[in-house]
Image (cartoon, rainbow, N blue to C red):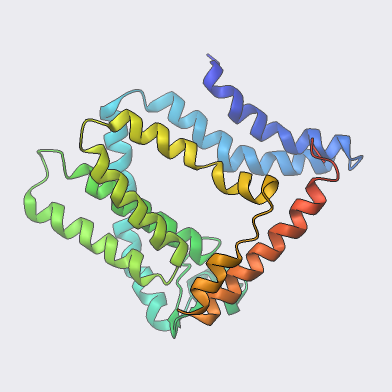
Length: 246
């Protein structure tokens, strides 16, 4: 049964179709774009709505993600040593530009995900979930320590600064949520999410302060970050030509 909480997901998945039709790109382009969002967002949402109804189901889901991340550790370590080659070995091609796999004098693994950033975010998420599961009594102390530290170490070794920052942010949230202010912390976190796009779109913030800071640490990362800000500026200019479904 559809509820009001499903409306944002429905709008998200249907927006590419509306945008395609309003720009005279045709029905086929709209179906193609919308189907990607249905696979990426819609189906996982429906599965969660169907099978995750309470804390017990959420714990099982979190445990499965942690187990999958642990299975992922060996191929991740392989690609850290040998470079991201597993996708090429199995499917005959690299799933992304290979030049982006070199970071900090080492390799940034991708395994079978679309990019090294996606893999790093997966490992970071699994590490936080492993830490959350530590509160369950059926986990022995040594298991709690080992699982979390394995996944946390892999996260740090992936050479993806964004994922590492979000991992540390997640650790901070986990610490705060262990107190009595759980609801306030979660609401505050959700309110933080629109701050960045709002600052970029409506306050004309160009991010040069962050780029200057990283320039002192790692010039390669600073250039990468500057490229992202420049690309976003181009996309924002294009988007504001037709703000609604443009």
